[in-house]
Length: 74
Image (cartoon, rainbow, N blue to C red; front, side, top):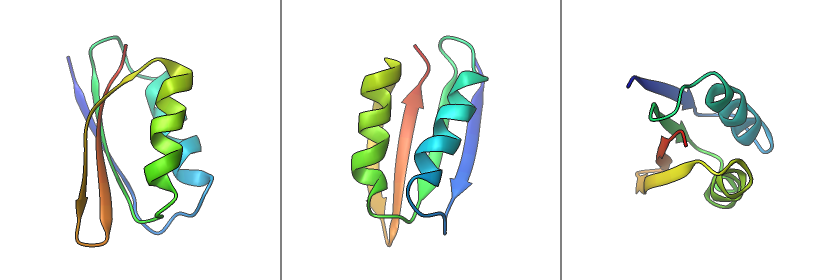
């Protein structure tokens, strides 16, 4: 199991979701992806993306102006 960190700060919709999808496609089952976004729409886009891909949202948190998502590849 590996963990990948992706800082998508400053990117606007739809780029955070597109880059998250691309990063997930390179992971093996059980790998984890941690992403940081500043676009408020990511709070909607990332969970919707995970419903499409079937990957698991382990945690989501708002820290200052940043949204942090912890994802596990299914």
